[in-house]
Image (cartoon, rainbow, N blue to C red; front, side):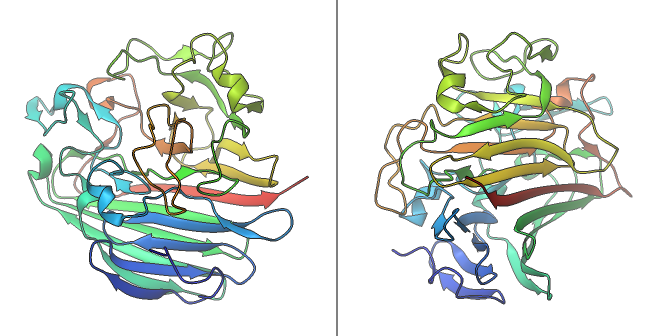
Length: 355
């Protein structure tokens, strides 16, 4: 199945139905970025980006069979929530009241629970201006959804701009206090989806601390300095070289505590660069954390859009977020949204080429 029409064909957003993906929205700018978003899971399914020679390639991993997003490729490109990352044992207390969430196989709540936002069909509408084009998606999460309190109304927009950026903006309101933490779970390979692994990419992360975790990837103790550890990515480093450091042999699946910036301002989070193609992706966000996952558990089970299996390191996820298990860690920035407030989060992927 071809994932979308020819790159750069659609300027205003174009929509076509799909029996599993819901609606496939394709939008972009001639000679620039072109994106494909599915309404099931508010999912970034494809992103075509020119290389240093101007040749576009799809840099987002996704399964060849969209139905795989219900099983082995569940989170690929999805908007995850109500709470991205992990909540230990699916339990937390809020305003002295305990809550039990749905949990997955390891007994913890991951990315919103057993039936998170990635499984839902979102409502969508097009957005088109002379400078931006894209899609706005909406979801209603009822009180008690996966055990979370409050009726939550969520929107996420994917907008491609003439400045070489893909901007993701999240908003939410609730009629009761509830933890909220939304992100996108795309895997990137700047050489092109199915082009092999990302071990030859270079990665920099603007973080002087990281979050240590136990064997279940639940945070342990305080955030620790990256200095002198396998998690020091403050200067660009080849991913293969980074993973060769002691302590990184299983790959990264860790939260990085981003260096502070002005309240509400976009802060630099990471830079990913592919020397082979010259594609460079900067990640900027209003969030305090970044989960870096180097796909160390990929085993070739998922067949990608190119028809090639995704093995270990086939892509990298750079998930902007509040910190994992924050509802149980009072020293972390609070993820609690209260009535009368609006949750707001923005992440920008800025593309360029060099070399």
